[in-house]
Image 1: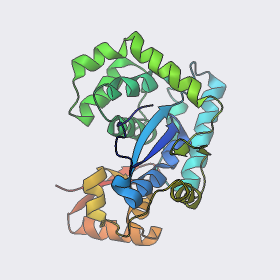
Image 2: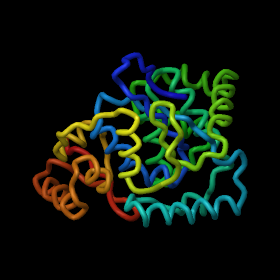
Image 3: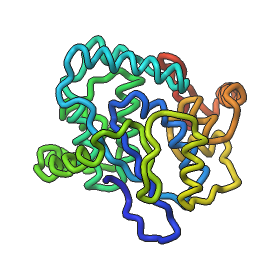
Length: 264
């Protein structure tokens, strides 16, 4: 399990079962953002990386491409399925191991997010040390020399093996609240929210502005802004484009939408 140690008894631990290469986990990023905003410091998120395919054969790549299209259609998240069709990775496990290696230096959440963007938006093949180190360099704040050593460490392999066992048979993405049975699979946010409240989490009343959300999370897709700021989809898009006209935010075009970031 990767993430901060929860020492405060008033904080609810949330375990997210996921994988950098899971299309439905990319589609569930708006749900994750809304959880983080709605419950704030009252929850602490950790990750279990389940590992999708140790060896990715042609039929597996085709299935992941189709799942990417389905997840994008369902969630509205931008995604390019060609990453699995033109030059598919040999395995999804190197990216999973890299998340474990980054976790040795702190919260792996920003790195996991960067991997998702690289895979599903930029169409990059993230199955080798050079690409995985490049992603770490783009995140910033990481000791790259240490990361390169950790990527070849037996301890990292063992940690990932433990995650594989813990995630066996679970449909990703899945959210476990306070160690309870996970809410499995992509679905409406309401069922995730209800599970969090049932486990003792207390929602906050305030929602951030669009710019505050981008300041907190960095790049966000339009559905993520809508979720984090509690805006209907058309209003979120209108707010973002209005800010873009004022040069306060800027879009990064992607297949099926945009990723937004602060202009300065």
